[in-house]
Image (tube, rainbow, N blue to C red; front, side, top):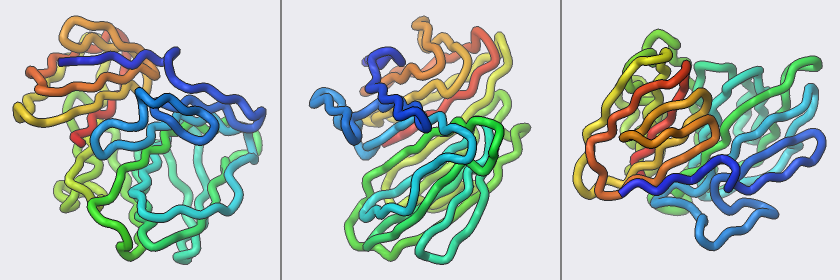
Length: 231
């Protein structure tokens, strides 16, 4: 069964410095029908104005993944990490018992476009942690590239949950499939472009909840970037 969550159905807030879309309930946006999917709790698509960002704030008991589409984000946290995250990189922060951090658009002239992803951890009270890895675009083109997993295999970042994130970059007309276990729950998110998913057209910002999944047959209608969560 495939249920499409259209981009225009998402929660949308514009604070001037931040233009944000929420796939699931978050902050001022609440929809009891979309509180998350499996272990996946948040997919926020954020566009941050130059030089602006999120001042120091706290998190706990959450696996947080940052994925950059355009621009650079400057990150600082209470664990002593200072970093810049760029397109092609994945950042994982395990909030665990508690962590504070800030995130700012590193550019004074260009907008920052990113996805903020939260996954519920397998247990509360783990030690906070940080990881950042670069994935070369060539490794994602025309194939699934494992970006996050519970054991860090294939060079992915490690998350403390039995969940995974795969990413694929497709050229126009390119096709890719995904065979799943019968009991697997999947969420597919189109980060950019437009695809056909088992005959259904999805465009940038669209998502799909997939349960008792058939084999996924995906073809790109235009250059596309897609994220596939097993949760």
